[in-house]
Amino acid sequence: MSLPSYPQNHFLQDNTKLKRLFSFYFKLWGLYILFAIAFGILATYYPEFKNEDYEQTFLKKLLDESPLQLFVLAVIFAPIIEEMMFRTLIRPSHNDLMLFITAWPIFYVNRFIPVDVHWVVKIVFIAVFLFTVYYLLIQGIPERKTLRLRNFLERQAWAVLVITSLIFGLVHINNYVDEFAVDLALFMLIVPRILSGWMMGLLKLRNKHLIWSIALHALNNGVVVLIMIWAR
Image (tube, rainbow, N blue to C red; front, top):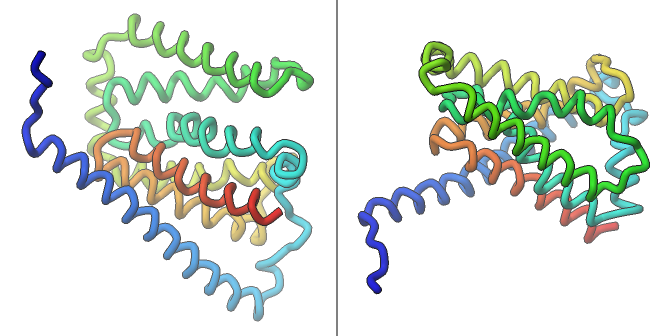
């Protein structure tokens, strides 16, 4: 039996995209460092830029009580769901739009899942829900129906990148407060999320597939979570 053959540029292209993934990761950390320096300088002169009362209590609780759950949620679950929600509108394919529609109802479905349900059961339920909704959408909505919307979003790709990066950051305000609110200190806390949203979206544009923004998201979260687990 002969092995399947691929054009040489198939592997070169994947290798280029993989290199770009790590290049974007290190550039993102460069942005984090520049922001940390700028933030430190600003906070010295303007104390209102900093509020030590804002903490990621839920993440700290998970780190203390269930590091495995934190790892699965931050490195596998969140990158997939959040990229489906925020990066699928950036120069989307038909499948991207179906993933976008699939992901957003999770916000509402999650409210009806009892709090005491084991987190693994919860993730499995959400995965089955996502797969079912996506399958129904793919079967029920032909590509021609989304062509006009895709063409519009294609033309507005940079505007969509900016808007989705900002919204991605704003959504993470809930990491620090129970109810949505915005003040200067909170906004400064989410600037790194806005920067990461920008880089993930830009990588999707450059590598032309959602899987790469998911990979960057997972890599970004994964390194931080592993450091947190190791340092506790």
